[in-house]
Every structure is written in C-alpha cells, then in structure tokens.
Image 1 (cartoon, one colour):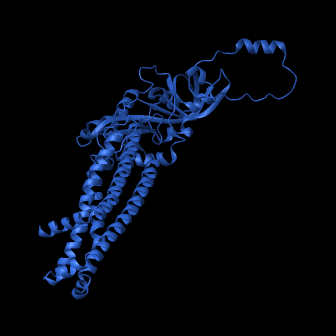
Image 2 (cartoon, rainbow, N blue to C red):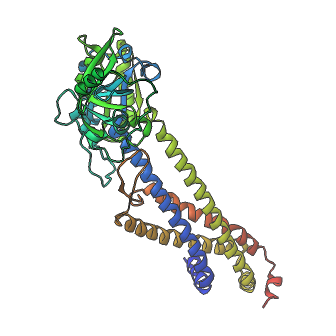
Image 3 (cartoon, rainbow, N blue to C red):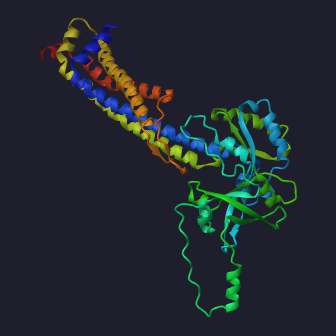
Length: 458
C-alpha cells in the first residue's frame, strides 16, 4: 500500500508528463475499442443477414453442394415432409430450433414474350410463411424491422424477381422499378420493308405490357416444363450478379416445374436455431441422426459460413485490420510509457540515490517504477473504457445510417462496445501489460544506479 501511495504521489508530482502519457493511452484504448466495436457490429450484422436468408444449417443430398446446382432433380431429398417432422420432434433439436423449412433451387429460362425478351435465371421455391419466420431472427437486437416477403398472401403462381431480371425482361415500367434504364433499341438490319398486311397483323397482335412472365425448366425426365408466373414485385438483393438472375416463387410451383406429376422433392432443408452458439450441439445431433435413422438417405449438413463464403472473407479481413491497429497502438503506448519512465529515472537520480542510501534495496526501486508504470496503465484503461462507452453511446443514438455489404437499405450505424466484455477485458489487460512491460527496463536501469554517483547530482 505504501508503494502504491508513493507511486501515485510521484505521478501527480510530474503531472504534465503523466497527463501526456495518459492521453496517448486514452487515444489508444478508445481507438481499439471503437474500431473493435464497429468490426464486431459488422461481423454480427453479416451473420444476422445470412441466418435470416439461409438459416444456420442446411441439410442437403450428398454432393448437391458440389454438383447439384445445375441438376436439382438428381439431387433432391425424397420424402422430405417426414424428415422435417422428425427434426421438429427430435427431443434434442426441438428446444434449439426456431424453424425448419424446405426449399427448392432450380435453374431455367424466364421470358416476357409480349416484349420478345428472355434470359437465364436462378429460381428458388420457398414456403412463404416459414420465410417470414426466418426473417424475424434478431438474436443480437439490431434496431431494424424485419421485411415481410413480397410473396405473402399471394396466389401460387406469383413470383418475385431481381431488379436485373426486371430490367432485361422490360418490366421496369409495369413494376415501377426505380433507377431502371431501358435498353437502347438495336438498329435493325437494312433491307426492304415487310409487306403492309404483315405489318398490320404484327401491330394488331402486339400484346400490352403486363407483369406476367413464363419460366421454363427441365423436369426430372429431361423434358421442359413451362409455368406462367405473375410477378408481384422486383427486389434488389444487393449483389448485381444475383439481381440479374433471381426469381423467388412458391415451393409448390417450383416443384411442379421440376417434378411435374411425380412425387415432389426439395434440394435443402433449412434449420434456423435460436442462438448461433448452439450450432456445434445441433451439428453433433444431426451427425448422430445421419449415422442412425437417416443413414440410408445420403444426406450432409452445411453451415451458413460454408454456404456463404464471403462471410468468412469479410470477417477475416476485418480481424486482420483490427489486429494490425491493435499492434500499432500497442507499440505507440509501449514507447510512450517507456520514454516517460526513462525521463523519470533521469530527473529522479538524486531521489533514487537517497532511497538506496537509507536502505531501500534494488528490488524496491524496481517495484516502485514498475508500480508507477502499471498505475498509469490502470488509470488509462479505466478512463479509456469510460470514454469509449460514452462515444459509442453518442454514435448509437446519433441517427447515422450506413449500408453494410450485401444490403440494399441503410441501417442505423451502431458501435457495439457495451456488452462485449471479452473485448473490453482483453483491451484493458493488454494496455496494463504493455505499460508494465515498458516500465520494466527503465526500472531495471534505475535499480542499478550507483549510490555515490547518484548522490553527486544533488
């Protein structure tokens, strides 16, 4: 206790230098915590978006993930209603689950034959009510309202398309899509005009612009099936490549396109858990089921990170940036505290000699200077933590918005510092450790001063 009191008194006696050192620590701690909170917010926001769209886990036919996108009929899950019911009633999985829902992915060609245009598309058949449950998952309490699927309450022949599909199929005007330029007309090849009666017939049979399209897909026997779909809305997914191909439709309609009158199947069963932390336990239970009652169905499980590889790419990049910033700030604090303690040794040479002359051992001198450095670290960590929490609160209540990767609509800008106890604890302990390390060498040098040489500076 006497050592702490003496160390605090020495810091207050040289308050200008101590204040400059504390300011460097303060800026370091606040920077690390704010960027760490921002990085964590992006991490959890991406996770929330992927879990809302594709669930935590997906059960698929073996090798569908590698080879089945172009041939859903060959990699479908047969008798899927019984499998869904078994998962919902499983005594281990049931308490973890939010929803279990089947989906069917298929490829095809969508055309607006009234306008004479078509393009290849990627379709996804879903159970609309289940999709609305998926979208309500918000385990990290983001200040956003869930978006209800545009297919809610629509007829079985309804569909939602990407804005790119609407642009190519000349449906921007009908669907009132904003910022959707029309394609410039291609100049026709020169040649004689068509006969007048043909031109008149063409004008008479031209169909008015409607929101209906036709989608063609190959069925399980290789023959094409065609469905007339009523497009209720064009939505942007935030990814142009997906916008240019995406078509969402009711599961029953997608199954008729692929399987016709045969027994319907699905390409994936989506499992959404109440908490992401339950994924290891859910995977372990699914592995048991697939090694036991489900071993004859040739199934495999993929998590949302595997299904969406950009998730780990983005979070890995942010983690690398956060590590670099932490290392840089730690180095600055290390040299700042080391310089402060070294200057203190020079200015307090007489004091060190006097303490040694009255009987204080070298270990006592070392403890005194190390205690001063550690005390600086503790004070800087506490003040920095309070400052970071205050700034984060101001940012979270400022009304600022931003558009995260893969999103279309802006969301409130938040910095997640409060509640991240592991980050706050590691930052505080890291700062104190750096302060202790940087004060050790000056303390060692002070302890080795010769008593007589030190007293000559009086």
